[in-house]
Length: 444
Image (cartoon, rainbow, N blue to C red; front, side):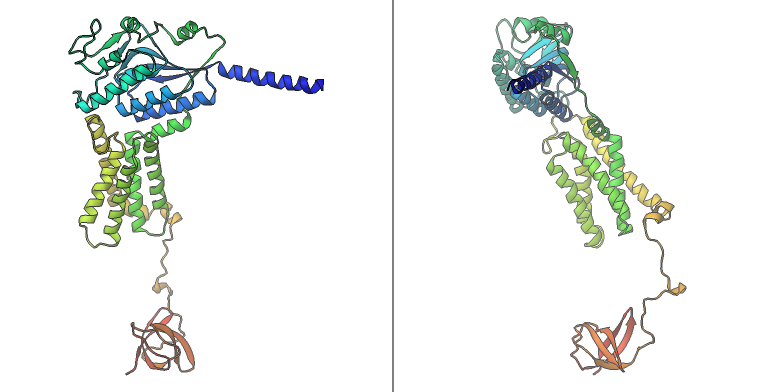
């Protein structure tokens, strides 16, 4: 009995030590770029990792000029709902979207010379967005500040230049706090020089700092988000489809096209750029092009529409738009997406015209495709009769509707008509010999 109690105690103590060691982990993530779908996904993965390692505290190392409102809203909501305390260390700038994310954190620390505020929503050209966006941002800032016990009027005044707070801000200016001003008005706990200083102030000891970085899978995804790589993938998608249409049944070109499409779509989808409707747009374009090639003769409305939908879908997948609302998308990003798509398509066209013949005659193509021809000059034939029956007559051995069997002399042979129905026993005449069957007609 004593041994059982001792073993139970040791097991419980081991579990306690493991839990204690796990709880000493402090996960640090960096927000040191524009807040966009990529950053949104990065924060989501970092918080998942914090849960996995049972982190005791999460610290955001921030220096950002801001970014997309919807992504900032997603990040701030995730921070508010996270069960473990999250602190932010503003290492220079927390502007616009960065201010919202900072206010969502449990504690705010700032380095000397840092700034927080200026959360007015602006469009891609830097001008103030319509009031509906400003109103939405004001409400988010106010509710987020209230959730963490901070003055909601100050949070609103970081967005609304018309809001005046006596002794803090005057009408016509949005709030941007320096480190000292943020401390004086409850938007910063203290001025610090490092994350280690934050932990010392919180009396943390024996902790392990875990700086979260993208894993290899995320690095591969980021690699395929490069516009140059996207252009190459578009070239392979279109080129693969073309070569498969030229040499149906080979399999390799269409396989390359499918793999390229997956490598193109999945990274953008995981990062929140590719929406479902954009992917449907791209697929609809391919379907229309296929209809133009296989069903509808010539090159008309279906082909042109398919081409436009394909180019549009591939371009929109790369752009963080809100269902054709490009108010917050920089013009440079739109231009990059369109040019990447057009260059990929142009490369595919050049490959079709200049590389098509060379590819089908290459050693590689001959290894993956059956290119031998059974020429009649070499003795190959699809005729299986031992002699010619052309012009001979006989009777329908079975009903021909339109195919069946005929009796010529004492031989029963496969036959078919020109489409008419011939009853059994009817007299017939052979009018052609094609392949393994005889073409016959009814003798009037």
